[in-house]
Image 1: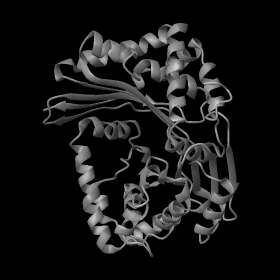
Image 2: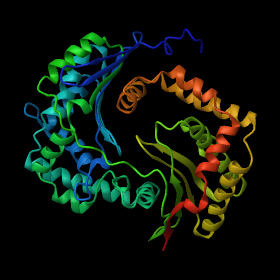
Image 3: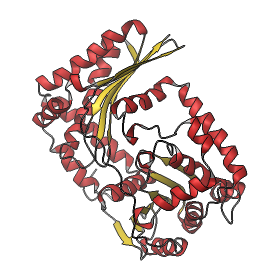
Image 4: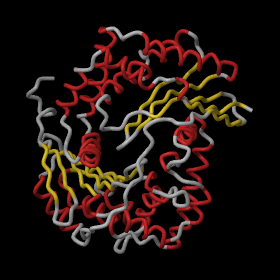
Length: 419
């Protein structure tokens, strides 16, 4: 793609409202859709043990009625226009987002601001939604490939809120009251921690006016809750096993990694891709293609504001648990010992850049990048700057990251073993 491509031209603008809410946009005039997100800088790591799950539960409850909209009204509000409305919660952020035609931006902003600022948390809906989320929790428990990541994070961060599951616990969910939800919103949904992000055929000045109008009751506050820092190294690696009446073993192993601000995050990104992303990765080729030990095998990285994690997952027969773990360790030691070839690095760089470029065709992906960049960096990180940093990674930098992170004595391992 040429440098003059409209997908690469930065059409980014940012405005800070009087109350502290930040509005960021990226205008793409040749599309007909707009993706809008209202982001809050709050997630499961901002909860105490007794509060665990409340951020995710609030994400559910805002859709259950506001002062002027019923549950059905909210469901129909944008679907009747051909649009889409949803939300998600992570360890550090909550996002409520919509995708609509460019002619329906005002309607989308009205609905999003309404559910974020005027949710009523009615008692009847509260009790019903508790049952829904408890079923969601039980479904996750029935999916070992899903739930093992919660167990793994608990092993990595056993004494920190980062080890809490985003969905919470059944005991906590049953205990939440309306007052608990209102109190959590008041403490964390402060204007200085809210970002409105939009990408697509959107006019920034009009977006700012809509945001100012719809969030006019949000007032700037001087006090903020301080987020406790996250661990930057494993001090006590754990090995945990969970017996389950299943036929396949599930394994997660890894260690505390880098934050999203770390100077070596791009070498880590390249290392992770060549090690365990896609069918051409080393783990896939070795464990699945060469030995036939696993159907699903991959590595993963999660970069957070002040810490992060690196891990590898394998789903295998119980008789292959030891051999599969040994093969992963062998690949990790090889990365520490031998620099990757320039050819393999070049293929991996092309893979990552291609994935990023393809993501530009999706307005929701653009909006997600805008919102998270503003919360993490307080500015937009342009694609061109990211591509340059990906291209600048050397084999020596990747080896340095491997040496730094892959101390197997500091690895925690979690196994869900067939009982």
